[in-house]
Image (cartoon, rainbow, N blue to C red):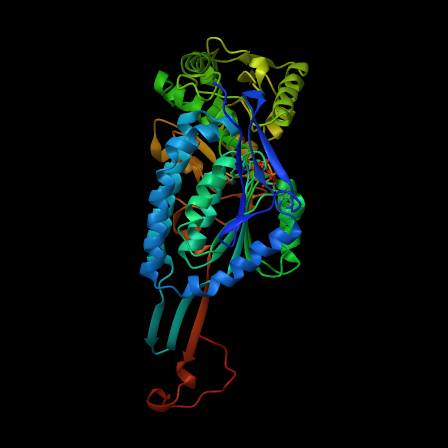
Length: 506
Ligand code: NAD
């Protein structure tokens, strides 16, 4: 079926911006049929980025001062509105990103759920605390920062944006979002649906290249930056933000290890968990399992079980086909990178096992398809083990000793997520505690193991700051302590004995 290309606009201060004569256009083709243009969105130039920041600045005071109940009602209505876009935007997202349509529709449902979660968490993390006791009177209030900037990756464009937009707005900040040029369309539609229900300037969405991103991050009015993407750009963002001491949340890549202990039941259902743990969204997920460490005594059984499970559940093809479970990759560059990792591993003596099936009638040459592969016979220092593949290939490694595997897992510079698999949950938790990562799943890996209430984020080079949980909402509040020490109180609170004005605090 042919579709007419759609045309959307960057949105700032309550109206469309960018495009002809002011930033140009970003065009997106369908990764499954690269001859098809899905649509284009207007980009902004430096002046447009500045206008969005000024609009957000102007909107901040009234938005922060709005009665909590009123702000809450607006955001809950916006959550309902974004959930209602799933039927229309799911297929659009599938066509611009190559992700299977059911998962794309799920993004809108998740966005609504996360908005409701963030609104609900404000009462817990934003509450004022008061103490009046023998040490004195202490009040700690929590206040929004002001104008926030969100810069996000493409693999879950609405989810990655909403993980910043929802907590920022729920706590009284305003925000300017820059989506990725690789998935600009559905995110723009969804975010402008939300923006249209809020006062102008509270939420803006601007598109552009690295220069626009730098303009936003380095803008004089920015008070907080949240970034999801790769380590190379993260360093630029952090360096730009540091020039004005702007706080930053960095959600970066992972090279997640899955540790499969010797007592893990390798049933058909469990093996399907491993397949989805690695290959959801064609492996293009930050917290996908990217290194599988299996106890040597179970390795042969694991390999057979994995190949069989993949044969049952992985169907490569057009993401709009409901029978398809794996679409193409999002870009020619990603495809080339993953294929080079597999070729390098094979040249080094490894074996690549092609996985799954191809949907009837699909010509994989029409798009950026990569057949999923499972790679055995690699060493820990092979590129396919050391690099974040971010695509449909994964290496199998073996271990004999838990101390040894924990050391090998922790040798990686990245520390986003991880998993431990065992019939004995206590044993799994004990091993999990030794892993240097911000999250460890037990007997699952990837999206199936996430929870709105569990804080998520990286250790080491995988970033800092948290999303999800109360911590992900607290990121958008700063504390302000108001303190009258007992020894300094006046009037009826005055201490019985005067103490030195510069004594150390207790
Ligand atoms: P990227 O770093 O190339 O781009 C991220 C965003 O930064 C895009 O919007 C891009 O346009 C923008 N950008 C590029 N240069 C910029 C600059 N100089 N200043 C400001 N912004 C700039 O990453 P990507 O390829 O879009 O995403 C893939 C990476 O994201 C992977 O490493 C993946 O693991 C990671 N990721 C992490 C999480 C997480 O929650 N930790 C989630 C999803 C993806």
